[in-house]
Each structure stands twice: as structure tokens, then as C-alpha cells.
Image (cartoon, rainbow, N blue to C red; front, side, top):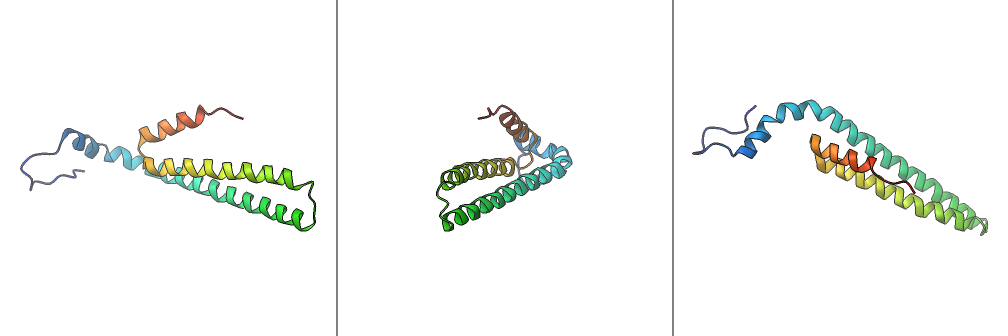
Length: 117
């Protein structure tokens, strides 16, 4: 598939030609890219549900004047804010990569190299 027509005086640059030539390969990866985006979107949706559940527990503890539980629940809220942010950042990186194989490979390496707490 050529993205360059004959109405211009000069042909495409080498970079554009390489991009144009990679479309067939990129097209084969589109399903994996879409699936990856959907997986992280579902993960973010799940994290938001977890956050809502923890917030409800906090509200119930406060309403019942269960002050001993509030610090623990606040810790969970703080952790959950971080979880949502982490999943959101990964989702944004997946979308920004646009399914390009090298972008997904770099992201995979970075995620694999993360240190646990």
C-alpha cells in the first residue's frame, strides 16, 4: 500500500517510505493493540470500582463513629489512588504507542523491570 501519489515533483523521503512499507506489518498487530488497550481500560475500570468500594467502607466507618478503622481505610484509599494512577499511566502509554511494535516492546520492558514495594 502506497501513501504517496504522483502529483508531487519529488518522491517520498526515506523515513516516509519506511513508514509506508511497514503498514502491512502494523496491520497484523492491530488486533493485539486493540486488545491491549481494552485490557488496560478494563483494569482501570476495575480499579475505580475498588476505589468506590473502599470509599463506601470509609463513609460507613465514619457514620458509625468507628474511628479506629478510619486510619486503616485511609491507607487503603491512598494506595488505591496510586493504583488508579499507575494503571491510567500504562493505558495512556499503550494508546500513545499506537500499536507500534517498538513502543509496545519498550513499555513491556519498563513494566517488567519495575521493582515491587
